[in-house]
Image (cartoon, rainbow, N blue to C red; front, side, top):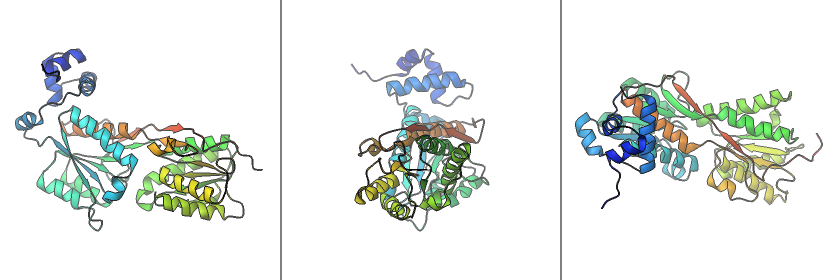
Length: 344
């Protein structure tokens, strides 16, 4: 006998009728948010997947959502944050009977190709777009009236629904942590220009923490990278060549932070006795390197799941109460940061 969950076993798990489960699956707008969340949680726990084919036939929809990662595939499939976003989105989509069609920026010279393909061919019912780069194509989605949720920052001039981590709050927590350890010369390795809105939010967090401590951010201690370990290594080399080098370096992603650590080890500096290092993303490797990296968890799976929830609600005609959803971040303090021993 098959142990595969059915509509009725899901209903029993959720404490509702099987008709209510069916209404949730079919996007009935009369179902309350509380009941919908309870049923969807039961579906996820039981790994129940409705028949997408039957549902699509009844609704006239494709029952597929497009996920666009406008990066070259090498970066997209090696980036832990992006992979976790897709994982979270896929979990939510599967729980509500949807498939996922993934597209990367295979041809770097034409980042809009994935958007046009999805929109013109009506391959999907809506789009989840990671806005780390390729944001110049977002206006076309708005003009087409396509149900779209941006994971990241769509820009102030675009009236698009978005979900993103609390970048400012996460950077504030890291900087506050380093200041509390007695560090005053705290360097920052900023990210690439195409991520300018997220990076600007993280810089605001740094400045706010310094302001709360009645101090100014050292202007000579801000360098730029492109999220790769190599760029973090190069930025650290420039920082440590200063006449008065930093006692702590905060890189705006873990990849660059790992490059910073490599440069410091090559220079024979003790970590973290000589220089504390912190990152952002809390990738899987953060807890595996030596010393383990203090970092900010963006809870990327939850961000992807929430973005998918909002998109499916948009497809079903239930717009969110607010355009922007900000998801909390969590500081993970590990062995790469310690109290400063240098003179102020």
